[in-house]
Length: 227
Image (cartoon, rainbow, N blue to C red; front, side):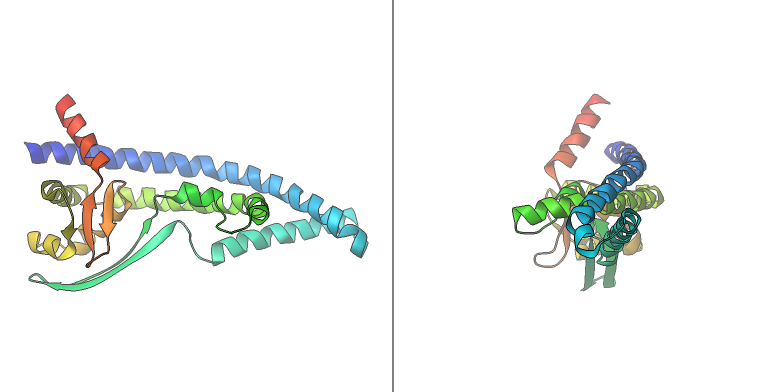
């Protein structure tokens, strides 16, 4: 009965998480375009004040250079790599055989990264915030979209079995232990998808392992008692 409850709750949890990600991605796209439009005019004013007198630029030339600068900002932000994902690589041995996992997960601090340019000086932070917010918002929208797709493709019943193991363990469970617990299951189907579940914590100290955040377990307990 407890397994059935966990499976039902986890399915609802994943469905709800995917919906939130979809809504977030849909909302962020138009917002990023609005911010990009505002950024264009900030760049335009900056060029008009700082460079027009020096190079005797026309208003049309200032506008063209503002478009080039804005496009460069977007290209730089995306080409330098995603700041909203982190990559996990694991290789090890267990009784079930060789374990190799390579996957990316969305970081939980995407919203913080959106508004923190990660530079030292306050003035530079303000300038970077003005110029980089639009591409960062678009990047976060894409990340949320990809996360929603991955959540929808998750093998929820199989992954809920791993969640049950983590709940029973009440602590860190090594990847090798999960492989031994489910020897007939492809580990790549039940471990990497959990990287997108808020509340599943990946620990890399002393080899990769998984655990659950206390709030995740409390949420299930509250749901189980109410149902």
